[in-house]
Amino acid sequence: MKKKIKTRLKKDDTVKVLTGREKGKTGRVLSVDNEKGRVLIHGLNLVKKAVRKKSQQDKGGIIEIEAPVHISNVALITKSGQISKIGYKFQDGKKVRIARKTGDVI
Image (cartoon, rainbow, N blue to C red):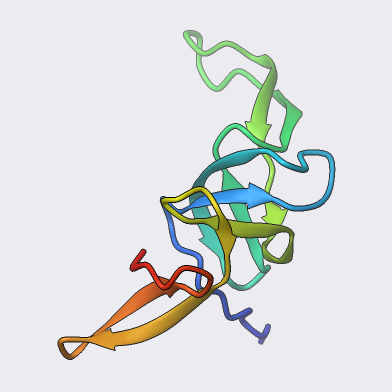
C-alpha cells in the first residue's frame, strides 16, 4: 500500500507555481491526489494528448489537457496576494485553516 502524502491544499484554492516550466503563474486547484502527491491546476502545465473518436459525433485528434504538478512545487496565495504556508487554528470550537504569514482565515 502506498503512503499518502499529507497536504493542506484543497480543491478551489488559488496557488502559485514555484518551480518548473510554469514558474510564477497562478491558478485554481481542480483536484488533489494525495497518493501521488500531485495537484491539477486549471489552465497550467498543459500537455498535448492524442484522443480517438469514441462515437460518430466525437472529434478525435490532438487535444490539450492539464497535467498534474507535484505539491511541493506550489504554494497557496492568500487574499492579499502573498504566498503562505497553511496552518490550523481552533476558533469557536471549530478547526479552521489559516495563512501562516498573515494569520488570515482561508
